[in-house]
Image 1 (tube, helix red, strand yellow):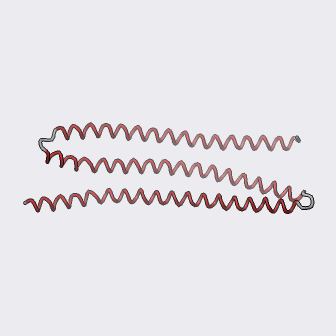
Image 2 (cartoon, helix red, strand yellow):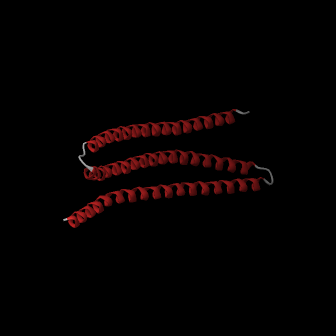
Image 3 (cartoon, rainbow, N blue to C red):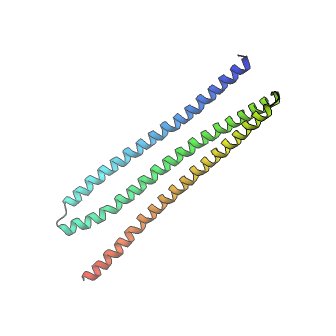
Length: 190
């Protein structure tokens, strides 16, 4: 094995190790943030449940219990939507970080592969052009597939974003409808 090949192999191994470390760092940071988010949500859920239970136990009759149930439900729905939004933002951010690392790695890989194909093409014996053309075609196809995969991931991210926004709007509209219905019911009772 010649010295330049050994140096190239060492450089490639070092680059791969750096990419893996970047991906692992991103994963650990994401898990840490998700754990903190879940702990905060669990603490809030527990405190809210205790406070709501105390209010319900203090109710004097069934009408008061029904009224409290409807009043206590909306903040919980809002908290669930907020939690879902936070999880979505976290996952979206992690996906962007991982995608950027993978895109950089893929870009580096394709540059190196294209350089290797060009070198092989220049020094290839008769018939080597066919091999080089095949390799270039494969690189082009893999680049196109990678671009399509990236585009699809962005589309899925956009769809999830639209769903989160729709859920947020639906929960904002629900209390208004509920209060209009309650007002109509009170008028009818008079």
